[in-house]
Amino acid sequence: MSKKKKKYYTIWKGHKVGVFDSWNECKKLIKDYQGAQYKSFPTLEAATKALKGNYKDYIGKFKTFKSELSSEQLKKIGLPNYNSISVDAASSGNPGIMEYRGVDTKSKKQLFIQGPFEEGTNNIGEFLAIVHGLAFLKKNNSERIIYTDSKTAMSWVKKKNCNTKLERSEKNKTLFELVDRAVDWLKNNEYKTVIVKWETKAWGEIPADFGRK
Image 1 (cartoon, rainbow, N blue to C red):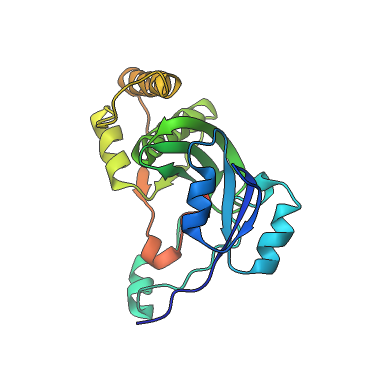
Image 2 (cartoon, helix red, strand yellow):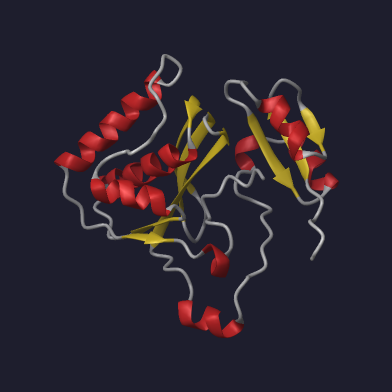
């Protein structure tokens, strides 16, 4: 069994700011912190340098990946369709602080971002990201496709229902207002956009990934 590579965690906003060498320690320092900003890096040097910069400049960068598939399997799958946008969500806990975003698949240029929301789940974020992407592409009369790495969110969008078990509360009132708007949009709008599952094993993390763990 291969040894897991060491990672370092930069916290720009949290109960404590700095660079840490443990994900468990990082989780404690961002838990219940509204608007926490954090990310993982492969080296101490990269994490330390990032601390001096802007958190938004580092989202989704420095992700390393080795394909789990053989060269023959990769040939069958092919390359991603770059006439597309990619969406993803990140949640520190389940439920926990959640945000989502959409990027251009090829350039990784951020097209939209929402959050952080105080009490959400990754599945809700993935669902909202897809619907936001659908509305974004329709508004811009774009024929691009949407990539997501969440089968659950794809299923919810298809059924036009956010089938979450998360209970509504004062903490997540704003989030559920957005969920209700998303469901309403799906029920009252037609779209031709194709939603496609991102092949993580072949292509690595989806370009919209927040790169935190």
